Image (cartoon, rainbow, N blue to C red; front, side, top):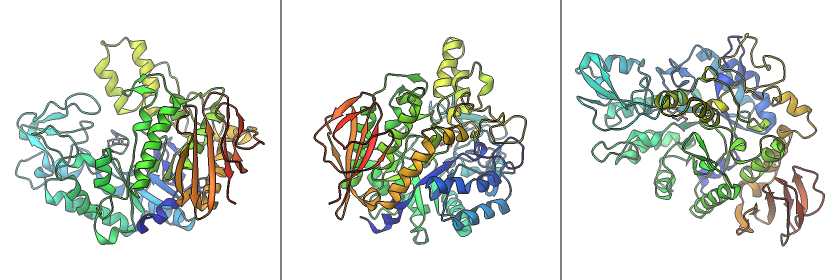
Length: 531
Ligand code: NOJ
C-alpha cells in the first residue's frame, strides 16, 4: 500500500450541505453554529471527517458554488470567527475538515469579474474567457447558451454553469497563482483537505471542442496541489473517470490528487437526469466491483459513495424506499462502505432519507432543475415535467435535515425553512429512526465501529465471491491473517450456498444462521472467518 494513502483508509467522511444541516440563529438557513452543535452527532455516527459544501461569500445563485470571496464566510453561515471555532471543535473531536474548492468559475459578483467585465484593459479581464462571438455552441449545464453577452466590453463570456458563474481562465498563470494562494490560506488555518469541484473543467480546448480534460489539466493540478507542503492534505476531485484519466490524476508520483470520485454506478435507474429506467442492483455491483479491481490492482484510492447533494436519493432509485426502506438502506451501506476505499456518507443517508413528491414548482430551488423546466416547458406536458423534476431534482437531497417529527423538525425556530422539508419528513426523521425497532442510524454506527475495529475492512485486500450471481454481492476482506466475509443479498429471497462459514459479526435482520442458507430480500451479514 502506498505510504501516503495509509491514513486515508481510516477516513469516514460525512458530507454536510450547510444550508440544510442545522440552523442555529433562527433564520431558516443552516449555518456554521448549527454544524458545530451537531459535531457530536457526526462523531457518534462513526465519521472522522466532514466535507463542507461551499460556505464562502456568495450570492448563492448555485447555493455557494458561485463564490464572490474565497477568503470570507458568507454571512448566512456566520463569520470567520465561527469557522475558526468550528475547525477547533472538530479537531478537538478528532474530526478532519475538508473544504470545497470551487475553481472552474467564480461568481459574477467576485471582484475579479466585476473589474474584468468593465474594460478589456483591466488586468483582471484576462482572468476569464472572452470572445467577440460565441466560440462554440456549448450549452450551459443549467440550460441556455454557455456564452453570455457583456454590454460594457461588447464581448461574450463563457459560463459552463449559471450565467452568474463565469468560467475562470486557467491559461493565465496569475489565475493559477491566485488559486494556489487560496489553498494556502485555508491550509494556513488548519483545514485538512479539499474536495475539488469540476476540476477537470479547468483546462479546455475551444478548437477541439473540449470543455474539460484539456491539454494542460495535469500541469495545472500539479501547480496547485503538487507542492511539497501539501503532501499531507487530503484531496478528492470531481474529474473525468476513465481508467486512463484516473491514473493520470491519482497515479503514483503524479503529485496531483489523492483521489477522484467515480459516479457511474449512480446512473443506474435513470437515463439522463430526469427519466427513470428499470434498475438492477447487479448493475451497480458490477460497476463498483470493476472499479474496486482496477484501483486495487494499481494501488489507487477508491471513493465509496451512493449519495451527495447533486443527485436524488440512491435508495429511491435503486431499491424499495417504502416497505423495505430500512432493509435497502442498511444493505446498500454494508455493500458499499465495507469495501476497499474511503466511505463518504451524505447527511440524511444514515437515517434512510428518500425522495419527496411535491405538486408544484414552488417547492423547488435548484438552479439546475429550474433551468430544465424553463428549457422544456411547452415541449413536454406540464404534469410530466413535474414528475421528472420530482424524480431527478437535486433538491431531493438538499431539503433541511429532519431531526425530529415536530413541525419545524428540530432544524430551525423560524416559521419556515429556506426550502420546504422533505414531503416524508414526518415519517423519516432522526427521532423516528432512533425510536424504531430497527434503526438505520444505529446500524450505521455498528457498521462503522466494525470498520474501525477490523483492520481488514480498512487496509485489507478485497476479493469478490460468487461473481456470476446477479442477485447478491459477496466479498472477502483480508489482511495479515484477518479474514472477513461480507454477504449482501439483493431483492430476491434466496439460499446462498457454498460460502465459507464463520462467526456472525453484524446483520441487518435477525439472522442467526451462518453464511450458507436462506437470505431474505436485502438481508446482509458480515462474518469473521479468521482462524
Ligand atoms: C458540481 C457541484 O457539486 C454542483 O453542486 C455545482 O452545481 C456544480 N459543480 C457547479 O459548481
